[in-house]
Structures are given as structure tokens and as C-alpha cells.
Image 1 (tube, rainbow, N blue to C red):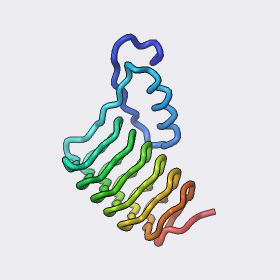
Image 2 (image 1 turned 90 degrees about the horizontal axis):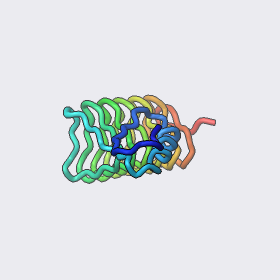
Image 3 (image 1 turned 90 degrees about the vertical axis):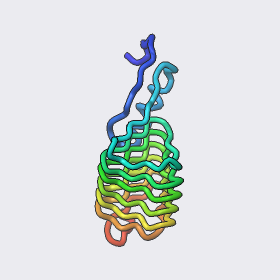
Length: 155
């Protein structure tokens, strides 16, 4: 259907699964008539100094602080907070009530589970999974899943 469009069309990708989200985006992006607007709930607070890629979805009660950067198709679920000078990679999803402190780097296609806490200055590699309620105190390698308090790698 989207290959046959003859008029401009805006698409919002409304699910959180990072790899699947990237696949849909890349397929749709081939059509120059398709655009990906940012959708920001009116009760979200996004700093004027923050930068957003395209197709970013920011839900109710989220906070995006000064100089934070979001890649393409990032999803911030209800009440998520991203601190100053942090970067969230494309296609990443941050679930409800996650707190990302300042100067955090989150790679592409990451999933941060409900209520997880990320200490300032931490680097999370691409394709990482942070389990629900985890407290991340150290860097996380790409492709790694961590759970717990403190967050530890799971086999």
C-alpha cells in the first residue's frame, strides 16, 4: 500500500520493539512521499535546547532536559525522564517511569524497562536491554541484557 502512494503521507510508528521499528521505518523511508513527524504530548516537557530526530514519540508527563539528543524514532513512554546532555540512539524505546541521568549515552535499538534508573555518565551500547526496575551503575556493552539492583549481565 505505501509503495503506491501518490500524495504525501505522515506516519507515526506506534510500537516499542526496536528492531521491528527500524525495519518498518527503513521500508517506509524508501517512499519520498512519506514523512515521520514528531509527536509530543502537550503535558510533556521538552527543553527548547533539546534536539529530536524524526518520528520521535514522547508520551504524557515525560521530561527531556537541556541539550538532550534523540535519534530517529525514539519512543519515550509515560513519565520517562532524559537528563541534560544525554543522547538516546535511533529506534530506542524507554518505558514508563525510567530516569536517565545527565551525560548518559544510549546506543541504537536499546530497550530500557519500566522504572529502570541510569546513573549519570553511563554508556549503554547499541542493542542492549535493561530489565524492569534495574539500577544501572556501570557501562553496558552492546548486545547485553542486564537486570537487577545493581544491574548485572544475564546469560
